[in-house]
Amino acid sequence: MKSYISQQLGKRIQCLRKIKGYSQESFAEKIGIATNTLSSIETGNAFMTAQTMEKIIEILNITPAELFSFSETVNSNDIYTYILEKLDFLKNDKDRLKVVYNVIKSLLE
Image 1 (cartoon, rainbow, N blue to C red):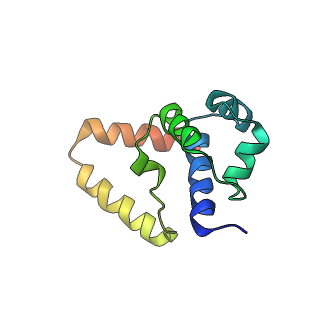
Image 2: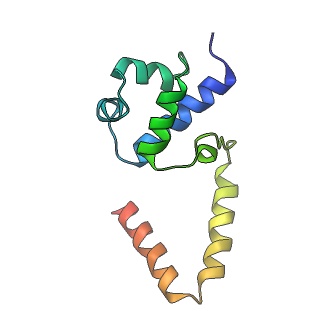
């Protein structure tokens, strides 16, 4: 039976792996486990060893706290409001505003 922690940790690993651009196969190879083992970890059906956890943290170049940072679901309106607030804050910072512009532009092209 899947525990809440193993499910959330698996989702977090999967998310971080995808953000870093690793396929499941290449990531499993880098951390030294079978692809089906990684799949079981990411779905919450298995829990990893401490050694595997250390390799995941090392390969993803994150802290242990980042690995266990399970954010709750945030609704779209809250996300939108947050972004608008930060954009208003950045409106006088040309360099940062340009970075945000480039990110948004690349997402929408």
